[in-house]
Image (cartoon, rainbow over all chains, first blue to last red; front, side, top):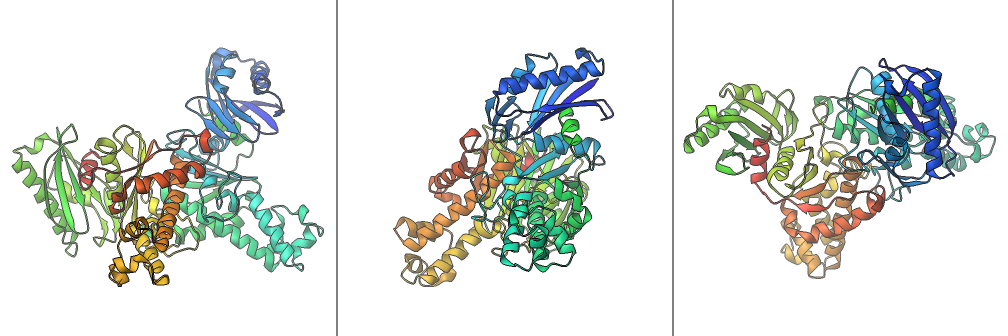
Length: 314
Length: 314
């Protein structure tokens, strides 16, 4: 049997057919056009699935089901996207509406949950069945995999690992609260901190690296400048490791996963990112060396994680 | 079938026989004598079980099993107490050792997990199957119940809800880290803050209430003084609500439980405690009114929670 995985993003809808060996046999994509009514976006999702079936000459009856990873607050049990800032959806009954076009099982989940599931099924955590994944991007998304399945929380709005406060009353977060993990460990937060440090130290190499305009700052510059010996950049990067480790230690003290996964552009740093975070963790996790401290790994599937993961909702 | 629940504490061992209606048919207790070798403590636990069986004239063959709630870092899967500060145990193979005296199933878990399970099976959360419980005492223990079962984490050392940092680098915690929930929301933390506030404001009623000696401070005084209109006490109490709500919102954003339970002496405050915390939560939880915000309730079983909960490990 085949499964379709759909990764619904703010910019593009990506869809793929996944076989029993977790291989993507074919994939297609289309612009989301998030400004349109949800019905039109969902019609395009259905068209992409038809396109995939035609391309592989597979009959719909050979489909075990369709899984969709969606940004925002997803009520997986009810099959409803409660709210998504990215695509401006509110209470969209996605499973019901997409179900008008297909008779197979349809399931939905948050996109970070799907990315985590993809990495556990076919990526950086395929040797384990319990993992936490953090997507370090514009925001911080979180996925929790327990016994090989997505853990959503008991009611909609769980598994929001980016919205755990670690510095109460600290930096403002997009969720309306202050001090969340997202406000310290997202790429956005790293860039904010690098901009501040560059502005405070005119001699910092980071200023040259963004051509004297801090609006050119990106998440790579502080790492590059730190590697070149720039003190201000080193502090930004060290602080970033500290924030990330503090957040991860909190998840470990709750879930004790087999592995912690990181994804997003910052992961291009590889072990420059994971090693110092692991060192901090060995001190921060409850029980010290009396308990298991999970390794930290970078995700490996890139964009495929969303497709493979959402297909595995089935 | 009957089950035995044993609540192993720093001061006393309490044991009870629980029937299928979650009723404690008989209970006995003995001093823990935590300074003795673990073998002796375990022998006393076995003797208490024999005493219960005799008292009710129940044959061992009618026992479905024995559950034990233990303080500290418990490896439920391996049946080993990895480390307990309270009773000075390290790597005690409790299930194996107690198993020498009984042929029935024996299971162990952390004491806060057992208290949570007890309240879900027979107490303040018996109408639901997903709950979080915080024990607000000397420290902050945490229990997580998912689908009516204890969630331990994937490896030993999970579900440590008291050791989630909420003010990174803040007050020192007993676990060696800083800023943990325990360092702000335990009774110990409340008393510390009340002592500081009383010392800083000599006119505060709290000073009179502890006879001019801050070493007499307890967790009731700031609440009583606040009720009498004392400004310093009001601030201490308001801050305590804020800390507790901040911690609970973090758990909600991960677990979205049906109910959040609080236990410990501070719960004598009843709705004076739960109402303001619930008000804070409605603003702090991710998704605001688009997602379910669980009610906060005080535990009702008192000491029985440990016995009923540990019996329900079976």
